[in-house]
Image 1: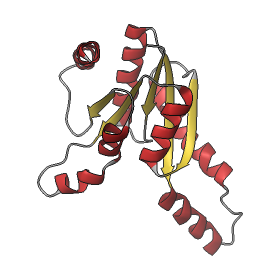
Image 2: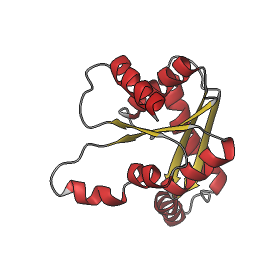
Image 3: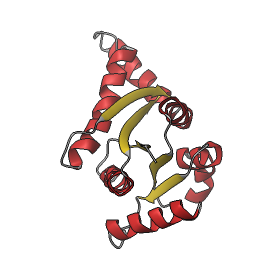
Length: 165
């Protein structure tokens, strides 16, 4: 395995995704790539807000820089700069899958908020589900809504699952 793609958000829970991906990268001797995707709706909302305030337009370049900051924040949480961090604007699942293909990722790591009750119905269209269903490589989904026993154990489990595949 040469390349891992970790899709991260900008919130604190996503540090778990970045740590898990880094541990996998170290254990497998793979290059770690981080990405953060700003959904188009968020980009458009920011653009509208700035236009109402008569401020400078929020260009796609600004959006990519802002999104890239989310990926870099996750890299900083690892205690070292990530070799590659990229920010994108678009439909998150589509962008993650397209980037994975473009860089030749052999594993995708992303998070999923643990949902209960009716929230599970909303998960049918979740980014993690779409990526799992459409990816051409293995996908590791890190649960974010509850505490994991220990990240190294979770990583060993993911490694064992990867080797079985």
